[in-house]
Amino acid sequence: MFFKKSVLIQSRWLKWLALTVLAFWVSFLALAVDIYWYGCQVSERSADAALVLGAAAWGNRPSPVYKERINEAIRLYKIGRVKKVIFTGGTKDPDFPSEALVAKNFAIQSGIKENVIFVDSASHTTIENLLYARAVMAQAGISTVLLVTDPLHMRRSMRIAEAFGIDASPAATTTSKFRSWPVQIRFLWRETWLNLELLLLGPNTKLEQIKLDFSP
Image 1: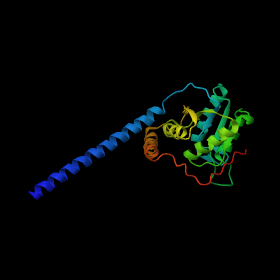
Image 2: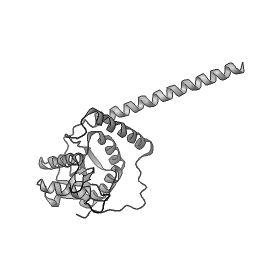
Image 3: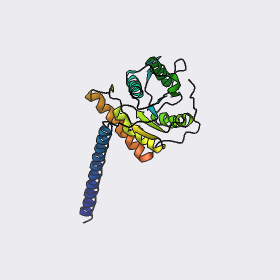
Image 4: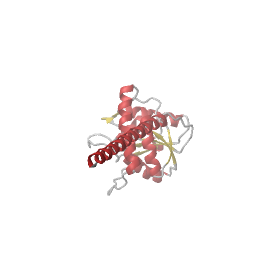
């Protein structure tokens, strides 16, 4: 009798475990689909500025991924949907300029006036990009932004922006370098886990010392 009851309890636990695992992966898949389709949204909204999230810089040149984000901000400026541009991103190597300064120089060479460009040269993560950009916005009198990043990065970035009280609308790059299916799947896999972490824990705002460097 005891043996039968033990087997029954074990069977029930295994059933609940299987259902829990199934529910998790269904939710994970739903989150991945949401991230993918969110990045496909097209907004025609105008704003005070384009806010470009950092990516790698190779010396004095933006990486291909960052270059396309910069180009999208330049396009938004030239068609009149924004009046200013904010570039974000620091550097891990003091011998090279920050991502933001590389982007600024690229934009100036592309015909954007220097006096409408603002930079955050201190941030190194998406959370820091947006946290420091919020301070740049306050300093420059910018209230609304079009958030520029790659489509699969947009959902998490917008969630962080909303958490920080930034009035942002998505403006995903239309020429993202993440095009092939293998690359997109790897990127989506990573972003789904990061979105899940963000939903469960929220953005890490407990940065004890925030170094802000907005100088050109």
